[in-house]
Image (cartoon, rainbow, N blue to C red; front, side, top):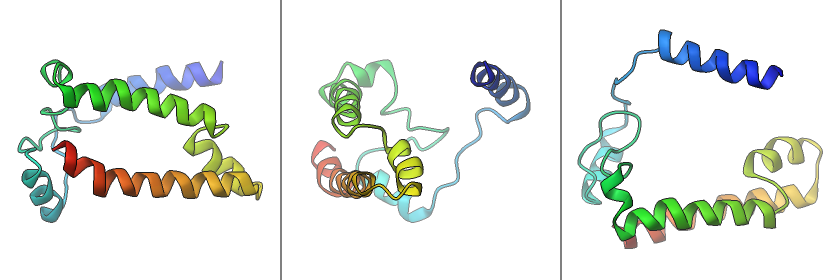
Length: 121
């Protein structure tokens, strides 16, 4: 019940007390890298060029949303937990499996960021 109350309270606080529509501050180097990948709209919390209904209809949108969602679910099941569970709970309990999983998550993230994203864009 506390979890549900926290969700409701968090949504109330976020919608009433935090500014909506403000730009996220990113470094000039990150903005230049995004522009070189074709992402020119850098306003709001996420690039609207990637996260909208028209983008979902493209092959890139399917790769990001559908295939990416499937891989996240599959990876969580295959690894025996999610990234947060392994990194916070597993590492604090000194579990070897969690250390291997966290290193795998990190290496996978680096590979996707530096090898797969440039291919997709």
